[in-house]
Amino acid sequence: MPVGDVQIPVIGNDMVIPLLVVPHILIAAFVIGINLIGAFSELTGVITKKAHYDRFARASARFTLLLFAVGSALAFTFLLSLITLYPIFFSQLMNIFFWVFLAEAFMFVGEVIMVYAWYHSWDRMAYRKNLHVVFGLVGGLFGLTQMIFIDVVASYMLTPSTAQATNVGWTFFNPTYITLNLHRFVGNFSYAGFLIAGWAAWRYLRVTREEEREYYDWMGHWGIVWGFGFLLLQPFMGYGYMTEIKAASPGAFEYLMLGPKSWLFNLLTIEILVMAAGSVLYCLHKLNFAVKPMPRLRKATMGALGLTTLFGLLNTIPADGYLVPQIGLVFGERVDPNISLAARPPISLGAMYPWKYIGLIGIALVGVFALSLYLKAAATGFHWGRASRWSQYLLITTAVTVVFTMMTMGYARETARRAGNGKDDGWLIYSCLTLQEQKFVGKGCPEQPRETP
Amino acid sequence: MVEMRRGPAPPVAEGEEVNEENVFDRYDEPQGFFPGQVIADLTVSAVLLAVVIALSYLVPAPLTEPMDISTTTYVPRPEWFFFFLDQWLIYFPGAALIAFGDVIVPALFVIVLLAIPWLDKEPEYSPARRPFVVVVAFLVVLVVVLNLFLAMSRIANFPGGTPSG
Image (cartoon, rainbow over all chains, first blue to last red; front, side, top):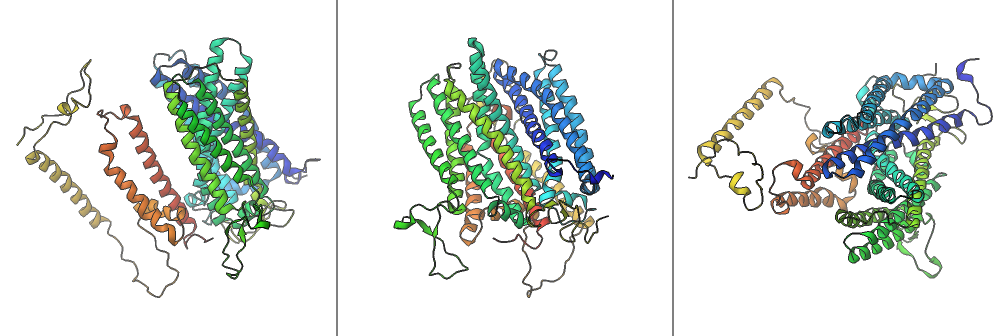
């Protein structure tokens, strides 16, 4: 039987890839994030001469090494499955992206060498910290470059460039390439930050020694600063990404935002609400333990928490949700150019424009305000090791939520290619290569027209 | 005329503190405009002029086809060094917001640039000792470069203009 005809029983071929890719992405994104956060932490330790930064950086290096092999094994198994189950698709990818895959492989080698050197020379280079920190930073940059290379493929699958396959540069430079990179770059930091905070909370609840409690309390704070700080950039990055998808693959955009999968965005708004409100609430709690009491800062943060919750709840209203139209309590009227001016239906409170725009921008701006206040208090210092148990449960909740958010977003991006090719089919490469039969169509492909071999 | 400075300022001595009071005694020692500054400016100007003349001879700008006033499909594009500004039109679409994106925001930015001497009074010269302004400056350059790339990507992928709606 030809390899391409293999049919996986029970779960089917389609499910094999996500079962391998989801854990791979969850690990790979964390490795990129924690490697860079660890390196920056070591650098901060060199500058501030505070020991906990160095301790955290060393633990990050160890975590990176432990997880790297697992993530790579999953990636390799995923690649093998892709070749076996989707040979035409993989052959097409290799034809266009050979140099990308080759370069990415070398990035793996570079990252392995640098991260091993970083971890194993920790004590040996204790007096040459300025050089040692470079190992971690370069290792992190190799990891980041891996992502930048594989994003060429990931973005191409949804918004393929119309350039000829021989025009290598422009084929890579497809409409969503840059925005996807920005979105994932910010996402990696946010994801790793929240997970660091969640792990710190887990450990904080279990340790008994005073200095350990202080360390894990600080680590929770360090994680939330990265996680929440980068989360606040995501609405803008996500908007840029969706704008490009809308322009390049409008069918996929409509399927995702207006069609059968629009519930994904509603789910995302709930996840953003949990992470944003959870982070501000944590900041509010930590302000109780500022070395220099800051009652005004705390009151301002309390206001920020209220606004974050309000904006977050505004986002969660379904698209067809009205306030109380029965008694005329509505906001604004939609002037639709396609219908007569006499018909001016009220704008639903769940409408994307303007309400969800206001909600997302509001969360970002209020979040920046709250985080600035928190960092101002952090600059004067906190009494570590006194955080309450519920504040740690809050951190664990944000960590669990960020994992679901990553999965929601990953599913959204991949399922968008289900659009526009019949009910039970989809695209491996949007508008170019079909999912089930792996057949090329004559539109949107780089070399057109083309026949399936 | 004041006395010209001889060579670079000496490094900060051990134990010496540089602050707003004494920084001008060391780094900003006044120097004569003529002939020192004039010679330096003239030298750089002459070199740049020579480079431009050489480039215009070696790589002359091509003459393209004459203007067609009857076309309705022409998509105006700025020069590449204004691509980043062109990208702002995407963020502020519609007639009402164009002025905000391409006039008000850049104008505010220029005003902030002019106000930097009053906003940043840090006496140190070393970038390592002025992290705030260095980080802000880096972010500004990053935003410009990223917008340049985004605009390039948009123009390459939608040569006939970005689909509306």
